[in-house]
Length: 228
Length: 228
DNA sequence: TCATTCCAGAAAATCGATTTTTGCAAAAAA
DNA sequence: TTTTTTGCAAAAATCGATTTTCTGGAATGA
Image (cartoon, rainbow over all chains, first blue to last red; front, side):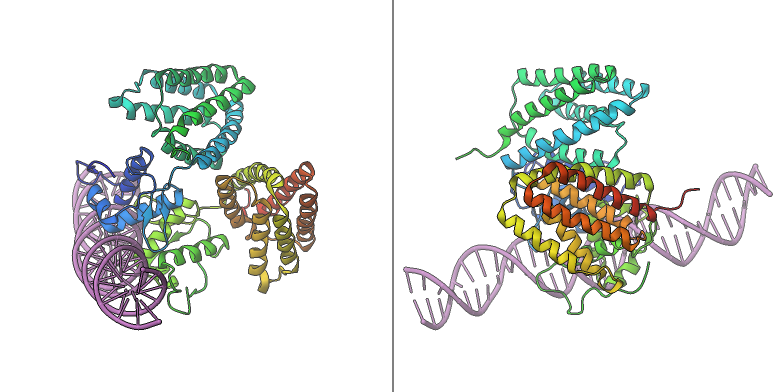
C-alpha cells in the first residue's frame, strides 16, 4: 500500500460508470507498483482510498483478476501477484514472439497515415522526460509509441494479448532501477525502429525489436526478489 | 436465450463462491451458444435463471467481459458478442501460431508421464460419442485432449492465451453443422498427433496441427451470418 | 507439551432497496 | 410533416445492511 489517492475531484465524471473508473485507477496503481507484490488487498481500505462503494469496487477487482493483474483466492479476497523471475522470462519471451508477429503484419498493412502517426508518437516520446515529475507522461508516450507501431496488424486478438503482456511486463520494469545510459540506448531503439518501419525493413526491425525487449528484460529483472 | 437452467440442486456447493459458480455456468452457456449472438442480456432474467443475487451475478458478468466472452456497454449492460467471419479467421490464425509454438515446446519438455496422460486422454476422447446426448462428455474429453497435448510447454501465459482462444473458437464451432465424415477425419488427426508426439516428430506434428485447425476453421465458418 | 476444539472478531460475500441513467413515446414547437 | 422537448417506465448501477466464512488465539483434553 502507499499514499492516499482521491479518485476524482469533480464528483463522477459524466457518463462513465464508477466501476470502470475504479478499474482504471486500480489498474494503473497495480502497474505502477503502488501496491506491494504479494500483498493481500483490504477491500474496506480500497473502498475509502478510491471513494466508491463495495459493488463497483468488487466488480473492478473481478475484472482485474480475470485480466491477470490480481489473483482471486477462494473465499479470502484478492491479492497482488508476486514477482517472479521465471514468470518475467515467460512474459518477455512471449512478448518477443507476439510483437514480432504483429510487427511483420504492421509493415505489410501500414499506410502513409500510419507512418505519420508513428513519427508523431516517436516525437512525443523523445520530448517527454523520464524525470520523476514527468514519468507518467513519458510512460504514456512510451505505451502509445509501441501501440502505434503495431496498430496496423489486422489481428485484434494478437494486439489484445500484446497489450496484456505489456501491462504485466511493466509491473516489473517500473519497479526496477535503470541507469541513464541504458535508457538512452532503449530510446535509440525507438528511433531506429521508426526508420526501419518507414523503409519497411521487416527483418532488421524484427531483430531490433527482439533486442529491445531483451534489454528491457535485463533491466526488469532488477525488480525480482533476490536469489538465495 | 433458451430453456431454464437451475444452477445447483444442492444449494451452494461447499466452499465455492456463488460468483464463481455463476461465472462457470454462464461461461459454459455462452460457449455452448445457449444465447443468441448479439443478444443483450437482461440481468434480472439471468438472476432468476441462475438463482443468484445481483452482486455475484454482476461480478461474473464483469469477469466474462474481461475475458472476452461478453461485451460491456457503457451504461447499458452486457451483450453477447456477435459472430463474425473475419474475427473467426483471426482467432483460427492466431490459434495456429500459438498452438504450434506450444507444441514444439511440449515435445521438448514432455516426459514419460506426459506420454501416458496423452494416451489416456486420446483413449477417452475416442470412446466418447458425439451423439446429442453425449456431446458434453465428448466436448470435455476433446478440450482435455488438446490441453494435455500442450501442457508440458513451460509457458503459463501462452497456455492461458491458447485456452482463451479455444473458448472463443468453440463459440463458432459448436454452432456450426458438421458431417460425420469430417468429424471422423478430425478424430483421425488426434490419433496421429499422439503418434507423432510419442515419436517427437515436431515438424510433422506441427503441420498436422495446422491442418487440424484449418479444417476446424472451415467447419466453424458455418456458424457465421451468411454473406449478402 | 502437543494437538484439537471452540470461540469471538474481522473480513468477504451476498442480499434487498435506493439512486441514476436510459429508451421510448407522447406532446409541443417549428 | 418534421424536429425537438418532456415525462415516465424499465433497466443498470450503486449503496448500506446482513449473512456467511475465515483466522488466530484461548481453552480443553490427551
